[in-house]
Amino acid sequence: MKQVLLVTGGSRGIGAATAVLAAAHGYAVAINYVANEAAAREVVQRIEGAGGEAMAVAGDVARESDVLRMFGEVDARLGRLTALVNNAGVVDVPSRVADMSAARFQRMFDINVMGTMLCAREAVRRMSTRAGGSGGAIVNVSSAAARLGSPGQYVDYAAAKGAVDAFTIGLAKEVAAEGIRVNAVRPGLIDTDIHASGGLPNRVRDLAHQVPMERGGTAQEVAQAILWLLSPAASYTTMSLVEVSGGR
Image 1 (cartoon, rainbow, N blue to C red):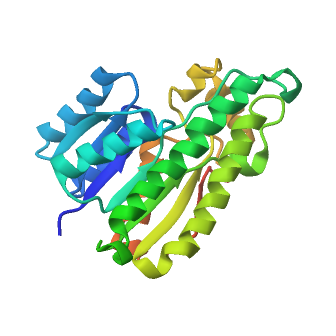
Image 2 (cartoon, rainbow, N blue to C red):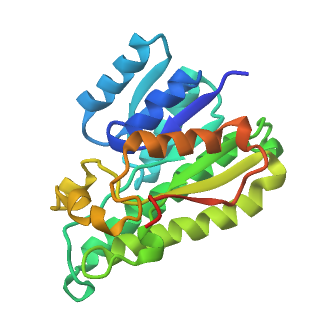
């Protein structure tokens, strides 16, 4: 059976690494992006250049209309979804909670939580054996921040990822008998450009001393964990929160 994967936020970092690795494992991959079409198409070209099948699909995961259209396009181009990686997410500039605006809170939860839930809902509608699907796997990209709290910097982000963890656990139990496995990875300090988008481009280097393994991780290392969770090798694994944090 054809394996069809959608990776949200798939144009860079962990998402791009996951898309490329999944294609190498035989998945047809849809790469979602919200603004950077050129980056998404570059990932598609990498996959196609290696003999794989891929497409880029625009959409803001925080907007239900975009999510519905995006899933419809994947249905039409690649076929029925069998795997989803909820990777799209944002951070903001470091701040104390007392100085954060309601607009910041709203954005943080709209993208990191609402986006994850909307995309998971559409995936379940396609994968569930109750709906005529053949099962599948969902991996949510959470963060070690969910248990560390990120005080003085990103408490709102940590709280949003804590919600993703709770959603992972609940959804996993809800759909386990319908052929769907739901897990999450919790990356720690990973060397991607998300840190620069939050105003701390050197964050991995500056905090590496806090990691027992004494280094930051790579997007490829997180992608390897995600691919294992998607694969038949993890056939009895659901509701798991897998730490990819170097022991931090």
